[in-house]
Amino acid sequence: MISITKPEKIPQILENRGKTVTDNLCQNYLQDKADYQSGKKKFEFASDIYGSKSVKTALIKAQHGKCFLCESRITHISYGDVEHFRPKGGWCQTKEDKIKTPGYYWLAYNWANLFLSCQLCNQRFKKNLFPLENETDRAISHEIELSKENPLFVNPSTENPEDFISFRGITPYAIDENPKGEATIENAGLKREEINENRLELYLPLKELYLIANGMPETPFKEQAQEVLQRRLQACQSNQHQYSAMFRSAIKDNFKY
Image 1: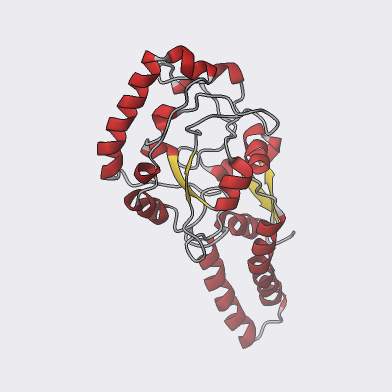
Image 2: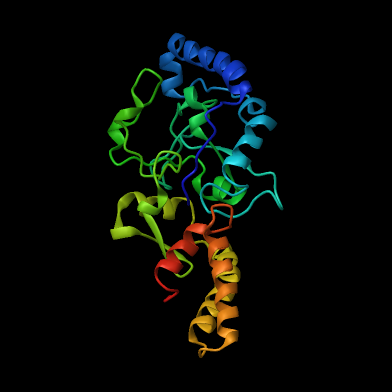
């Protein structure tokens, strides 16, 4: 995960249709609060609003075409999903829990709550998971302040994920075993085999170049190798690069893993 800076200009469809629909959802909740809290009634959401082309295009640009969780590049092979950081329809504290409703219905079209995700991170792992440090602080309606919550998922638009998660080689770990890093790694599947295979394909060649360039005797060839290495190191640390957080950690650790 890396920090994500979203454009200040909110996609117009969220400002217009999204706001109108959100107001209606909140009114519906107030009119039938008991039925929504018991699960007798459930909210319906318009995916053509939060998943519109303008929203997805803005997210793709802000996230450099990468999944906000695993940092894999999406746009070469998939459309990707517009994922709700706080799940709109219902939520789970743990993987074993049944989905509880209502979800964060009032944030379904909220720009700050939307990210681009790969389908595996979204549909196989995160799903409706949204653990809190203290579950009793959960905002179960738009009448409750979100500020009381302390989520155990890292929010890359308000926090720097690299304060919570680092890497040993290709493997992510929670810095100082912090609970937010651990929960994010576990619940988003950031150690899954498919991602590690992709990371390894990019990591090994650069590690080998690093070791060769730094281990060569002092010759003109070493100078050339160092120049190539520096270009590669600079490129892989850029936020546009896949798994840039992993590479920044590897460079900091001198590729010792």
